[in-house]
Amino acid sequence: MIDRQALRRDFDAMQAALARRGGDVVAAGSPWAQVAELDARQRDLKTQSENLQAERNRVSKLIGQKKSQGEDASDELAAMGEMSRKVKELDAQAREAEAEFAEALLEIPNPLHESVPDGESEDDNVELRRWGDPRQDDVPAHWEIGAELGILDFEAGAVLAGSRFTVLKGAAARLERGLMQFMLDMHADKHGYEEVWVPAIVNRKTMTGTGQLPKFEEDLYRLEGEDAFLIPTAEVPVTNLYQDKILEAESLPIRHCAYTPCFRREAGSAGRDMRGMIRQHQFDKIELVHLTAVERALSDLDALTAHAEAVLRALELPYRVVELCAADVGFSAQKTYDLEIWLPSQRTYREISSCSSFGQFQGRRAGIRYRPEGGKPQPVATLNGSGLAIGRTLVAILENGWQADGSVKLPAALVPYMGGCSAISKG
RNA sequence: GGAAGGGUGGCAGAGCGGCUGAAUGCACCGGUCUUGAAAACCGGCGAAGGUAACACUUCCGUGGGUUCAAAUCCCACCCCUUCCGCCA
Image 1 (cartoon, rainbow, N blue to C red):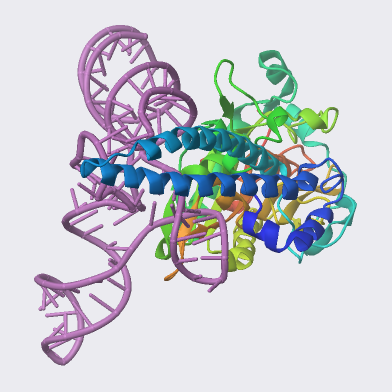
Image 2: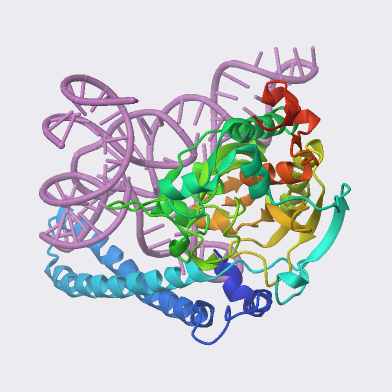
């Protein structure tokens, strides 16, 4: 959520930062276009009400004094009736105006950080660096490798649940589990994260705190008969662990890693990546979440990104780091780096991690604040990133480790997690 | 699902119609004392809006009601805890 104070103070700057996102973010009729007026109306009604309330409080106190001294207060009593009615009326209007204003605020995306490069589509994202040596020979798609080895069963997934579901068997199932353990161990033991385990179902308030609601309800699975949703990422429950809390400055930064399943309806991506397990309705992910002071948001983003990269390096998977341009940064984020992994069958890099700083946007929404040294409480900055998406990592391992004899060579770091096996072969 | 209890400041926890934005303790900040630290003592210390700064307003789970006046009384809802039942 944008800062109400800043909205009044730096309206033009904020509008410029929002406009860079393109689309109709600041267009006529957009929540942004109405927000200044809604704010003014809301404040005007509140001021009117407050003045009247101040008067009411004065008279009320006087009545108490007069009565306790046995004096007559009938004049004051008569005035109070009218005043109370008026206050009630003004309050109702003020509340309505406030609700309308708050609603609009929730629909406005995070103004971009000034360091985000301009751009009109994902084609304008900026490659920052590459790591590893991408193989250029012909490699079958992971669904072919998996089928050949008998470890990926897409038909079974479709029968059980529908398209975009996959059944993993044998070595693939074990690899899925091994990757989860491997990544969690790395972040908890080497990178200093505290591991948490959280619910995969959350309520509406929680989903609103991180920005998935109200705008993106169609992307979520909602539970029948309840105002609850399956999480699309661990970001939601882990960040909201601190909702409506005031944290002491010395408790920051807070760094959590978590494993959760993730559920996405993929409503807007019909037809994309229909084959294989790149785009699933359910997938596993390890997530990294930081809560930190505003000044540290960007340096922490570098640290977080490095932690995610460390996983790819340990797994010897070639990747590149891309900075998202203005048009591609998500609703709640102020700045984002994507990690993209090399998929030899597609001869291209595909997203495997998205590391973002949200500035104080989520902290403000979720009511997560901290008390700076000697100062007033203010919203924390939040960051998060995948460290990593398990399914896509598995895909990358199958393709990058594929051998001409049909077997798959596993990264050395994973061998202990695979019961000592260094390769997956048929049978 | 049934029964009972409870939701108050960073935390714990009093208050149960006006003098309460709220006792007390802990935590925190400043001071005295001390070679230093601890202890002890003294003082300060909720949040949001608003203001140049004051003033002022709001907030005791949420919403509604009673009243001149509500954290305090009434109603509805939500959540939590405990016990019972059922079940992984």
